[in-house]
Structure formats: structure tokens, C-alpha cells
Image 1 (cartoon, rainbow, N blue to C red):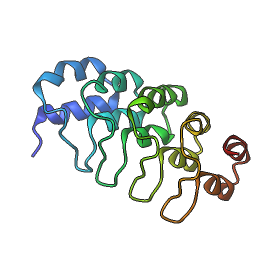
Image 2 (cartoon, rainbow, N blue to C red):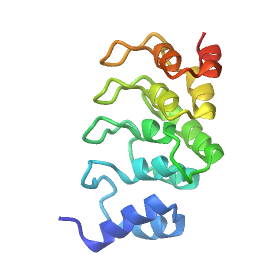
Image 3 (cartoon, one colour):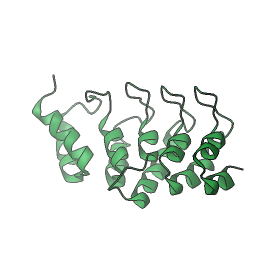
Image 4 (tube, helix red, strand yellow):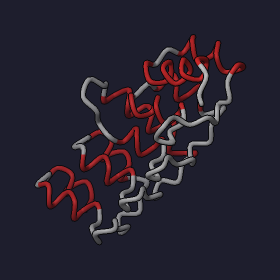
Length: 160
């Protein structure tokens, strides 16, 4: 069972409260997971809090996966409503050097595929430079197949 300090730590990661994260770090197990198996790094990346991602990278391995095999990079690649696409791109740039760019979640989707599905153009453009474009998900679809299925012509141009 999580104690109140750990809950506050996860809350600070989700909300992007860097001062609170720094204050709580010596008091909690940074590798503790939430109910879905996510780390604080995954939570911050998923909300596009680049300043928290930058700090947490020295504390938590970005290659860790949650219960559905999502990494912090995959979470940063999904454009969520009310988050800044530019700050999310900063998260991707921070995470890529320390992540397995072609890791796949339980659906076989890579970070690039996640970005395409969420229609995150900045993420698609950046991740395409580093990703294995021939990688396929569990349905046998490549990133190009997904972009074509969704009718996102600008992504097709990036991927070809």
C-alpha cells in the first residue's frame, strides 16, 4: 500500500510540480509504481512536463515499462488534450538518447506509432528520424501503414 508521501510524489509528477518532486525524492522509493505500473517519470512524460522529465531521468531508468509495456517515451509521444506539443517534444528529445526507440508496448506499437495514432505531428517528425520504419505491430502494420489508414498524408511524406 502506498503511503501519503508516495501519493504526493506521483501527484507532483503528474502536475509538473518540480519543487515538490525535489523535496520528496529523498523521502520516497523513486522506483515505486502506481496502480497501472507507471513510474513518476512515465507520469511526467505523459503530461509533457519536460522540466520534471529532465530531473527524473537521473533517478529513474526510462526503459522501464508499465503493466501494458508502455515506456516513458511512448507516453510522451501521445498528444493529450491540454498539454503543450512543444514541451512534449522537449520530453521526447530528453528521452530518446536513453530509451529503446523501437520498444513495443503490449499492442506492438512503438513510440512513433503512438505519435501517429494520436496525430502528434511534431512527435512523428522527430521520432521518424530515429525509428526503425519497418517495425510492425501485432496487427502486422508498420508506421507507414498506420499513417495511410488514418489518412494523414503529411505523415506519409515524412515516413517515405
